[in-house]
Length: 215
Image (cartoon, rainbow, N blue to C red):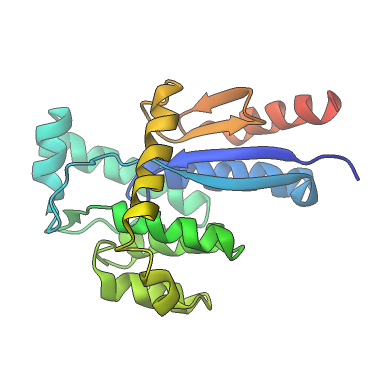
């Protein structure tokens, strides 16, 4: 059996462009009919590693971090909402929306990977945050999302306070940063080449075609 193309998606669950980028990548894979020729693994990246547990008002956060005015933020959100709609992903920005701390989510994504349900959990968390007004740092919400895809929340939660596992996730974040990943999504192919940002479907198709032809 031919070796599969290994795709690492370095991203955060509260990153809108990560959702758009992944949905475009998924579309490229589906349209090419190569679902059986690729394997996808999600790698941790925190947009805001120092985000307090209680989160921060989204408008305030974006203004502080990027210097964007409220008008610019609304414009950007409308654009992302349109892109999402084209891809079957719902963005529902609302007044009072808060940016969340995502470290626990990344720990649980490690557990989901071991269970073969990492992509399912990733998309549940992204949909929860962007489309269902849910706080993905709230452990009650995390429990719901785990159970919704058939994962054992009790077992998964034992990892949340496991210092060894938490250190492992931190070191994985540092590993990708040490390779120069400083913005997400970054999609890495066979650990040899990478695309940063939410690329058009055609770009993902081109890269995948070249990789398949090179085999």
